Length: 215
Ligand SMILES: Nc1nc2c(c(=O)[nH]1)N[C@@H](CN(C=O)c1ccc(C(=O)N[C@@H](CCC(=O)O)C(=O)O)cc1)CN2
Ligand SMILES: NCC(=O)N[C@@H]1O[C@H](COP(=O)([O-])[O-])[C@@H](O)[C@H]1O
Image (cartoon, rainbow, N blue to C red):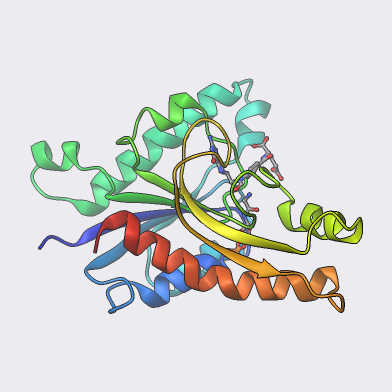
């Protein structure tokens, strides 16, 4: 069976990317290869992780696009175009087949940019998944862990969680592939909760990608 080619989008530390790097082409994530890592922040340490693993990378900054007088929509088109062009260079093969090549899956692993329909329409439907540190329908968007901890402090919740979901235009509302509840303990600080969530994320992202690829 042909190897499943994965592109990972990041914005920061890349600990979830590292979990995928470590799992690729192992029984946890069989017959897979991360072929490209892309960041919207040039300073993302995840780019270093990818380079250390021998994985090609590039970054594209929204700020640089805006400084050049380009719109957010133009950034999204340019980003998708660059991802596909670089992917086709890497995947190779005869020009005709290379041009048709698209990633088997694009994984948003801490990618802190809301992608527009102009971006999504350039990839196969269902071809992107996202890891989000909250339960379905709760704390959509950025800073989900902080918001969950604040809600716990107000007595509104006693647990939070993480999920892997398909990416659609509506943020964090795509089909849920995997979810896991995480209790919030009375002794928790924001930091201890973050640590427990991150540890669970590193497992669920691998299982979620495995599920999404059907490997
Ligand atoms: N169209 C979609 N785009 C993205 C999704 C999605 O489900 N649909 N998931 C997010 C990941 N994410 C939560 O899981 C998320 C990331 C970032 C933001 C956000 O508010 N970003 C701001 C910039 C914030 C910053 O730069 O620190 C923005 O894009 O203006 C919300 C949710 C990935 N994209
Ligand atoms: N809304 C998306 C979001 O908040 N994603 C979160 O960013 C972190 C990235 O960590 P990493 O760079 O170490 O993988 C992870 O906690 C992930 O759930």
